[in-house]
Length: 147
Image 1 (spheres, rainbow, N blue to C red):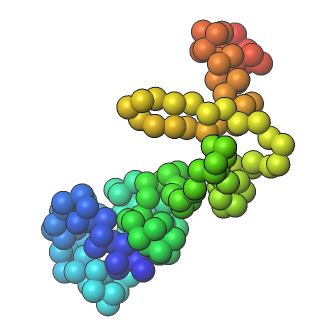
Image 2: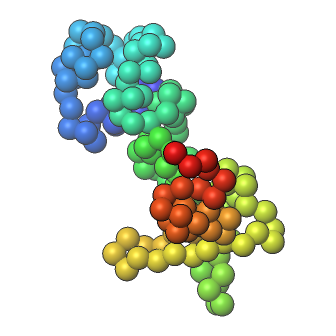
Image 3: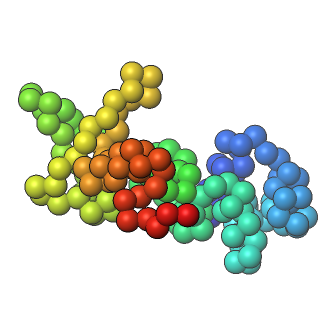
């Protein structure tokens, strides 16, 4: 897992083993051994690698491409929950993993936003209204003290 993830992220970013070695402070041979699965870097080096690639430490070490439809390790905070099918009346079922992560329960109201160039976004109504209030209040949350 780790070695495959390291190779994939390095290649996606068009970096050489030397590039990685320089950024992490190790030899190119050390990076080659990590990629070959012969050794694993210490926790501090793993943290540097995760920051370099913009992924979580857990995903760097444990990510399985099958969990993301065969795609690469996603950037930190980004998720691919799977494919949904639009029903006859336009309804979709939000995958259980997404509902759990974003605390979406039956009866919750969601706002569907659209941008013809970017696509659709689904946001919990409370979050959307909080952002709208912040914009109306000149960048301050309703309960935020004046500065």
